[in-house]
Image: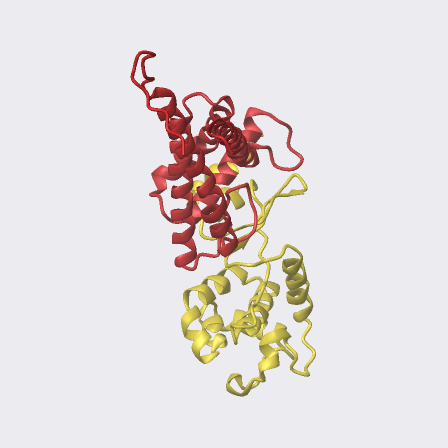
Amino acid sequence: MSNEARRRWGRILLILGRLVLAAIFLFAAGAKMKPQAGMPWTAGSVKTSLSMFAMGVDSYQMLPPWAVSPFARLLPPFELLLGLWLLTGVALRISGLLSTVLICAFIIAMYSAYHRGLTISCGCFGPGAQIGPTDLIRDGLLFLPLALAVTIGAFLIRRKRGAPSLPESAPSVTHAD
Amino acid sequence: MIADYVAAGKVYLVHRDFPLPMHKYGYEAARWLNAAARAGQFQNVEAALYDNQNAWAADGNIEKYVAGAMSSAEFKRVQIQMQGCAYPDAAVKPAAFALGGQTGQSCSLDTYIDQDRALGNKIPVQATPTYVITYKGTRLPAGSGLVSWPILKQFFDSLLSQ
């Protein structure tokens, strides 16, 4: 495969990777913010869903009580913005880096809860089953490598774009075996 | 919650029994609690059983804490409800007792406990504590784990403001 073809495939994979990553964050945000069953889409019902998410955050027993509610109100909108940002592909190095840091934080929180024997729901994609190895494997072996790949890919592409091109007059050596 | 929301009629608190097989005396404690509820002593006995869980879970002497939570006259009323339910000797209780009150005796309280357990299995209850919140007839997804009162209060307030 030529360098050009390899580069093209790299770009395609990077686009796919960031789209999948964006979808993950958008889905996670939507699951936390969507109104509970039977409730219409209103500011009040979204607030109720965020309050319910706060109960999930509190059950991790990691944050001081005063921080639980602000965190629970900020995280889903942040995930939504991050998902949209990844979709646009603008400043992908920064959005990729933020995604990686966020997923790392999720893994640490989940591992901590699992290690302490807390039988709580992950809350990652709304209410669900208890935290277990499946969640850790999903985030650690799927989401984190994906976010890392997108970030590294974004940095590599940027470096290639930023590399100074040689002037036409520069001496060149043609080598043939 | 009971003082601020239940007493004011804003929230209905429904207690459900879900004695677990690994807790040897859990089923018997549920019987005592149901008997106390029938005699109008639910809150006192529930508090006494929670406060002394380590003690009665070790020796099975639940009756001592139930009796200590009320006057002797009230305790007699609870004992009447427990007729046919109390196992004579906690120390020689068969293991099957802990699994579902299969003592060979007829205990009318078991019906309530078993109904609650069936409901819990439907959810399904997987953790202690598990809470299920129903709002305007719609059951919200079950939650588990400790939730501090200010956070739970905030959730109730957001529901009540709908």
